[in-house]
Image (cartoon, rainbow over the protein chains, first blue to last red):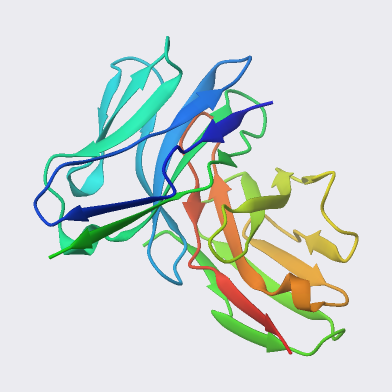
Length: 114
Length: 112
């Protein structure tokens, strides 16, 4: 089975500051890793994903994440945030093969202040 | 645009009155999922269809059932909604191979 830990439930930052949202996972099999964003009363939107290959992946809206196998981490970063980045961010993992059920972390609420 | 559509966006139902939520997709994805998301919590998988095969999570209450009459449509039936079933219900689809899920906008269910 897989599990995901998002270490920070809330992250407040000022506009144009850099941000890192932390995610660690555990799994006994190879996995795919994802970050999703959720705006209020909306579904989840895929920001980026790691399948294989280069450990640095770039996504939409200027976000990027780095896969670190030895530390079983997949932290999300953005060099300069905007007010519009205020949302809930979910890290998720799925085992490769089969139905690829997503297991989510508990989420990190990012609040960008002016 | 290809997408996942959930209807309705908001549903109010009475305690104990059966309710059905619907999901349709134009992506021709073979896997469909239903998640329940309560306020300030992560989405929780209720069940999924891998092609035509139905898979129920062990802790999904018997009160929840699902139907997938064809590739494009999937329904979530709540036979006797309780106050604790008030939540956002999310439908998602994917193709196997690490494509990631495509989510619908969700249905916000209120039980009165």
